[in-house]
Structure formats: structure tokens, C-alpha cells
Image 1 (cartoon, rainbow, N blue to C red):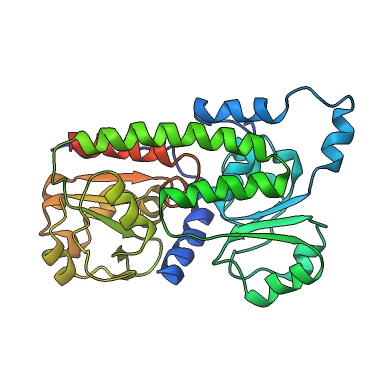
Image 2: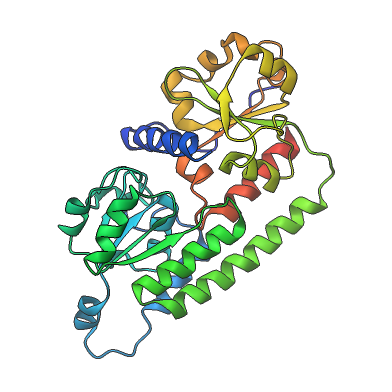
Length: 319
């Protein structure tokens, strides 16, 4: 079987930074502004910018100044057309391309109150894993509105992100409209997955950037994604991540390897990846069956999730 083709474009420095940030988050937890956006999301800015103000400049000035922590949350800001309100983002906020030019407040778990307050935000929107907690408390004490979104790797997590951004940005009506469209899209995608034959293939997620690769068990974003696409995680039974060993791979016997494009680039390409001895006896190695996707798109749980699930499911069906 020929190798499955990659789903994402060629390497760049920003995407390598994204992998480093997502690798840390995963292990610890368990062009234009609209370039590349799905057409479904493009209707949201129109809803957010309907006529009604005689002074659009003054209206924009009065809107809350936002700092977002988490690439998926930042994507929602752009999907709502609220990017002019952004005054800072974290290092995982790299999509759309315009987000890369926003002032960076650092890594989500190592925020600085001084650096954040220097941006004069009215609101911070982040996941519950953002911190340290003392910094979050300092922001609240300084009068900054803090919206923390629980990350449980579910569709409801995406919904919570949309509604939290809507509240903090003053665009609640637009957020409800966007959420309704996303919900409808999600229902279509999940119905298609459920109609497919089961059981699905054994899909193993490998997180590889530097040092020893890690594999994903339960209660991880990768495990949730594998289940969403109708596949089976062969390492269900343990939580979080653990090193990829020959013993673990022999036991898992994955049919397909799922990983990040940045991880493949960091290791030197697909050929180098398949040279790892831990994979030698797996069915995936025999067929060179691999799918890789941009780290933020894969693990960010943002508004692109329905499209990601649909694309991955189609690849798995053909594998």
C-alpha cells in the first residue's frame, strides 16, 4: 500500500513552534486574516458587522480589548470577525496567518501578569489549564474579565469556546449564530461517521518532536479525535501519554499512525520516521499507513474540528 499523502502544507518555523507548545500542553494535561478559513465560518463576521452604528470607528473603539490563550480560542475570534479587538495571543495562536503577527504573551502555562497587563486588556479568554493560577488571580484583581473554558476534548468544548468569546467580545448574537452553523455541520459529519462500517481501524497517535516519541492513551485530545473519526485507539486502558516502546507497539498493532506534520518534519521526514525500530513489526509499518496533520488543526479543538473529523474519516475509510 502506498503511503497516505499528508494533509497539510510544507514546513515553516511557526508550525514547529506550534508543535513544541502543543507537545508541552498535551503531556502536561494528560496572507490574510481569513486565509484558509472554511466557508461555513465566513458568514460570522457579516452577522457581527451588520449596519446599526452611525460611527463604526467609535463602535470598534468601544469594544473590549482581548487577550486569548489557546490556538482554538484565537481561531474563534477570527471566525467572529473580532480580530481588531485582539491585543495579544499565546504562542499556540498561529492560525489564521494574521494571528502570528499579534503580540505574544508567552506559553499558556507560564503567563506573566506584568506582560499581560501591559497590553491593557479588558478580557482574557483561556482554557482552564492556563496559568499559573496566581497570575489569573492578579488579572482578576486588576479588573480584567477572565473567561476560562474547560477543556474536556468534547464537541461541547468547542461550543464553550465560541460562547465565551462571544460574551467577552461583546458579540453574543454573532456567537450564537456561528454556534448554530457549527452544530449543524457537526451533526452532518458525525452522522456520516456513524453510518460507516465498524469497527474502524486501529489508529495510534504518536507525538514526536525531540527525544523519545510518545503515544496517546485515554483522556487526551488525540484519543477523542480518534473516536470522533470512528476509529479505535489500540492503547485505550491507560491515561495520558507514555513512551513509544517496541513492546507497546507490538501490543497495540496499529493499522494506521496518526501524527503531526511538524513532528514528521522535526524527525527528518516520513522515511526517517519509519526507520524507528519500535514500529518495525506493526501493520502500519508494513503498509506505510500514516496520516499527518498540522498540530493546531489536529489538537486545537477549535471551529475547524468538523472539517478535520470529516477529512480524517475519509482517509481512514480509504486506508
